[in-house]
Structures are given as C-alpha cells and as structure tokens.
Length: 372
Ligand code: OSB
Ligand code: MG
Image 1 (tube, helix red, strand yellow):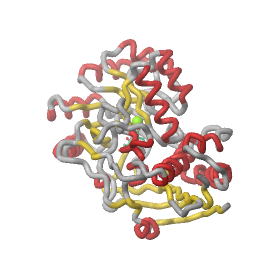
Image 2: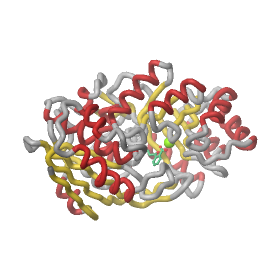
Image 3: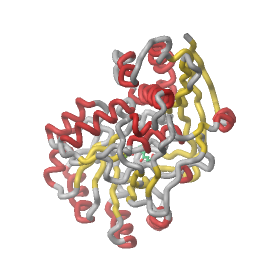
C-alpha cells in the first residue's frame, strides 16, 4: 500500500453545550481531519483531536498542523507499507506530538481496513459488537444545573456519568449527584488540577466515601509517585489519563501501582497502534481499561468506537453519541447511543461511516496538501 496524496483540513464545529473543565471553557472546537489517498484511489480518514490550547496536553491545533505537515506526512507519502503498524514506524523518530501522530495513524488504519475489506474493529482485533457508553460532564455554573445535566444524560441511557472536578468543585457536587441518583455508575476526573499536598489527599479520602468507580488523574500528568501513594490509601480505583502517553509510562503505572484503571485515549497515545498495545499490556497486568475521548468529531469518534471492540473494554467508555456534542457531525449516519446505553460497533469495511464531505467543506478553515 502506498499513500500518494495527503491533505489536512482544519474544521470548526460548534458545541451544543459549553464545556468547562478545570482549565478552560469551550464553545466550539477546531480539529484537523487527515485525508490519505492511496495509489488505487482509496481514501482513509483520520482526526487530530488536539485542543486549541496546550491545557490538556502540550500540543495545539497549530503545533499539530506543523508537525503533520513538515514531518509526519512527508515520512509517509510515497512509501510502501503493508500494515498500519509499519506505517507508524515511518515517523518513529519524531518524539512526542502524540495527537498529531494519532490522526495520521488513524487515517492509515481506516485506509488499510477499507482496502482489505474489513471493519476497523476487526482489523484492530475487536471481538465485541457493541460498546457500553459513558458521558463526561463539564463543570456547571451551579450544582442544580449539574444535577439537571446528569438527569438528562441518565435519561438518555448513559450507563456511567463522569463529573469534571477541580479544587472548590468536588465533594459537594458529588454528594448532590449521589443523593439524587442513587447507585448510578459515577466517576470523577480532575485533569490533574490538584496539588499533591495533604489538603488534596484529604479531599480524595473524602471522595472515597461516595462509591465512585474511579478518581481520574487528580494530580499533575507526570506525577506517578503521588498517584501511587494515593492509590494505596483509597478503596476507590485511581485512573490515569494525562500521565500515560507511551507504553513506557504504562510500565511505570504498573510497576509503581499508580492506579488500577487506565483511560486509553487514541489521541493521547499517538494512535490506534499504541492504543491496542496499551490495551494488551494493561489487561495482562490486571489494569482495567476504558476508552476516553477528546470530544472527537465523527471520524475520531468512530475510531474510538472500533477500539472498544477489543475484549478488555468492559468499563463504559466516553463514546457518547454525536448529538451529545454536535448538532451536525462530519459523518453519516452519526454515532447513536441506544436507549440502554450502548453504541453499535460497525461491521462494514473501513471506518464504517461515510464522511460528509460537503459539511466538512462548509466548515473548513484551512486546507493543506502534499503529493508524491
Ligand atoms: O480528561 O477525558 C478528559 C475532553 C477534553 C479534554 C480532556 C478530557 C475530555 C473529556 C471528553 O472528558 C469526553 C468525550 O470526548 O466524550
Ligand atoms: Mg481525563
């Protein structure tokens, strides 16, 4: 297989509901769609789901564009490869920049699945036909507004609700949601917003009383040591997200027992090739996994859904239906959540959805192309 042309499309979609995390609020998102064409004219799509600001990870839309344009696509275009894991080796000497790599890797996988006539899920080694869905709720202006949001999402069928927390917005909202919704599967995500001091440990011990499925990334991204200390003090599982960008980070998590759960994000780990390897290693070590999201548009969302077909993805994943975030998504049909909280994993060859190229074009801010 040989990619003869590649294009990057920066696309802006408005969010249906403003999303606030510990670091910032957003009303619309700019993601980069990667379009690869091979010598037979087949097309593979990927998505670089980097945030616009370096507040989740260090990349931005602009850095990802630069890295993809200057290093990743030139390493790929014109080269022969037979499997996407080989394609990823073409840019292996580029350090970091996992989001940029993830979008190109994903496009190679969808192209490969398309050309080899198999669904993306089975190309990845998937065995499931549906994925359990969870939903991620931002920090709301008031506890009442949060409780209303949680109610609407439980009503929509989501099997697990995750609440973003930050210093000053933690125990009270959790207490209110628990009091209103009983035993519904609930977890919290701090995006590393807590300093690893005694006061934060005390807050986490208090949260430990609310039967949360996990506390996700309370401390800074590289702080494995304090996550391990915390895990030793809690009944609740600690889950790492930002901390784990590479398989070596995962080895550190396992060795230090810095958490019992791993959030596998395709974007954060540089693509599907590494995500599959992370699934295999984590589950072999007794670490439970689920698939996290970056508010992906339909292309990235479809890749996340396909990944969830792997046997270890037992916990609900952040693969909510397109309508949770976007009034009109870039794929048809859109990803839909069933009334009982699952998404059906497509079985058609390739991505399993058509890209709505008209809608992509209508929302494109910039395009760049390279050819063999
Ligand atoms: O930590 O999981 C996170 C979105 C942006 C940055 C970080 C995170 C998130 C989410 C999104 O929680 C969940 C989704 O895509 O459904
Ligand atoms: Mg997270």
